[in-house]
Length: 579
Image (cartoon, rainbow, N blue to C red; front, side):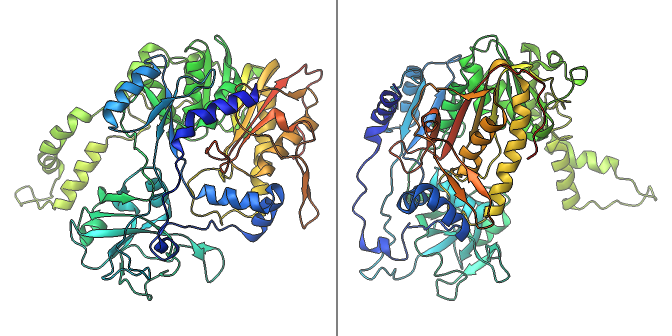
């Protein structure tokens, strides 16, 4: 069954894979996209042992590239896959769009991207550009977003050639962190730096092989570094072409990585269940669970960040879901005594406050023009002077500042529908199912152009933090319930090692089969660190009960991990283990 599901999924995306175009000679030269992912040497050794060197090399290369397709989850409470496909074909002219064939995932829609493309930068036979193209250098995070289909916005521009005018043709390159003189990693480029196109430019050689496309400047050089917002480059040719879904069919679709959707299915939510999503932001898995439940039941979506909780509220309102309750909660303090636990019914989202939430997030849009018209007049009225007969001078800067204050309003905490309730925690055994999508090192996310910030010590700290959160989660699930643990990292210390810890610590837990199963098996074995600490992974026979998504596999997903636990009888009160 698991092999059948995996084969069906591969068939769904099979025609999305095309032979790479013939790579021109200059692809090995400066003007190309051929990044090498840099790791901390100890982390490189650790992960090479876990996966074997050749396999880890393929994973590293895959992480620097985006997936060849976009996975779209259809809100089946508002629309159908066929209807969405028809609308997307009208919006994305000529795009290749198909429906998932895996049983239970037929509501997923795949949109094909293209790449890698060999971008013509005007190179001669030696790989040189004469005359050199003007260049715009962007930050790593900006470049990673561009590779996923985004635009180059002005805050992401770090440096630019001299005398760039609007409409000029430019090459777009990336600045990736480099080893600092005093240790650590640094960008080493001051925003606004002038690029001369010479070897004396900052990180001239390090940018070789880090060109992501060419296009036309949308602003002058001075405009790029003065404007607070706006698009800096209109791309004519990209290394990867992936459609952007910003503002497309809002409420009907949600762009989401496939493993995240599979995680919601692994939880197997049923109508009427009481479910806790412990680290719920930004709300993708929460809303996926709600739709699988047909919006019947109760989902508590918790996150420690106030603004992230508001984002979950906004997404739930956008998708028309009323079974989701949000609250601020530190996942390390999720359990409390029964007499102190929240009466969550007070926080439940009804249709009335759902409408209020929508109104809250749309508040003030119609008032902006009125505010701008009266701002100057209103400001002058409020400014006083000790001598009433003297003329009062009001600078334009003061007027603009007051306009921004009025337009932005009192802040997210005070706006209608913008309140995030703080939870005191929940009573033990009070949920039918709990999802712990734990904060992690995120080493499975792609595309990524840098991974050197993580050390062995930081990876072990992540795992320690996750074990503490798991200790809380396991107490909240009732006997007979389900606990799902997931991460978006390829680090076995945060994946298989946490599962091993859970099974060794809580004897009433057992791994359960997941449906659908399209990911690969987990890692078996252990790793001994130089300091003598031994990290234990899965035992033989357990590897097929978890799902590990390998970014270098034919599924072409992000790196991800899912484990599903059945909670047996808790014969005695749980004791808090030492971690």
